[in-house]
Length: 120
Length: 404
Image (cartoon, rainbow over all chains, first blue to last red; front, side):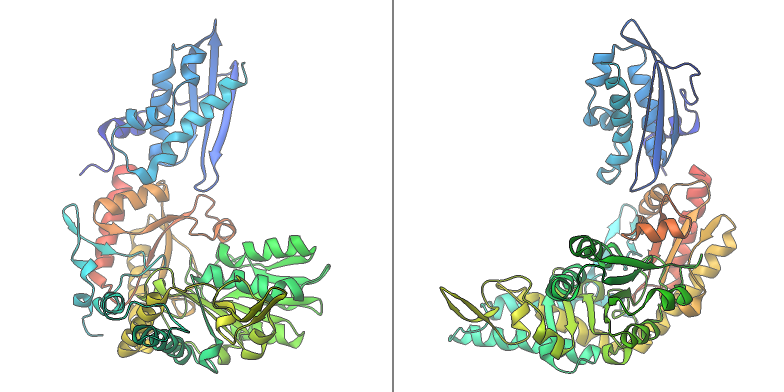
């Protein structure tokens, strides 16, 4: 039986970007008060591009997987490209999660945007 | 208890490969055929607006709607059918009291007492009223198991207290609160007692006057009735004194360009065309519940609760919240170690099991019992079985294995 799409399960079991950057260019930190999910992104930005990204995701499986998958999506991208990513983009990338869990997934996009907007 | 499952067509649903296992009854219950039939019959054979209609169907509809008030009055031990106001739900009933009575009763520096355990519906209206009137809102705190600290209640309820608002049964933990004792404290200082009975009336015999309430609110949809029909019971002399809540049609006896006079009880508080078939459906639900017997229902749920707590605690990886079995109704809030409650609910769903996860509209209580991220909650009703609890146990073991 599969509870979540295979991609989500992979990122839960072996997140690629979990951790912290000691001297980040910028940090984003927020949560969903209604369910207690919390997410911190650490970003290093060089010449307008995201050269390194780590996260500390403390929440449900979907929110943790989304945090890791979004980090995959934006690594190497320009700040403006990353800011342009939408809620629909991450939900689509996760592939087949229930509508009820949408806020779990979209927290990642909100935290990332909040961090990157500090740069402009 | 006799097998009632055939009365509930929803129980025939399949969710994926599994038959539906419905354990979300504290949110809303299923509806038996007889209730759906009563609603259909009303629209088919009656279907008219009530009161002041001369034609045959309007008279019939009015009689049915009036009778529904009478039916509710009998069910909860009210003094008269005129003490029964139909609203949309518990939330609206409590807002009605906060507006119709709170506005004139509460002044600057007066005190309102409620509890940390409340559903948001019996907390937010008092927060707003207190803020608007510059009154003081005080909360009776809870013990770690969610029971109320009665010594604190004695200290908090004082001569400045005007309203004491308390839930009868917790929607998160199933705790049965000692409402009579709290009502006594309130009445000693002349305060009004508002009781949220949304989780008690469906599951145990309740007599509102014996309980010591001045107002008592509950919802039809949590007791087999339609959604959108709720009840406010109030003592007649109090209801007569209150200001109207919503205004306009039906709630008046006479209108001129200079003003209006209010209609008799309960219509003074039922403005506009009400949820007529909702009242009729609720009356059918009450007939059905009384046919089983409220003591029987209480006993059945108590047995399921004891079984569920026994099975879940033996798993070793499930944290349970709430007081011991004798102090509660059939609601179990829990967490699976290292698995977020939303993930637990998702795993259950993939086994065809409907439970709820989150704060259950009682966020301050979640925090107070140490479940900042919320809990998963299973809640039982007349049609649930021990086999269904076994299915829940199986799903939780899977959740622990796959995600823990």
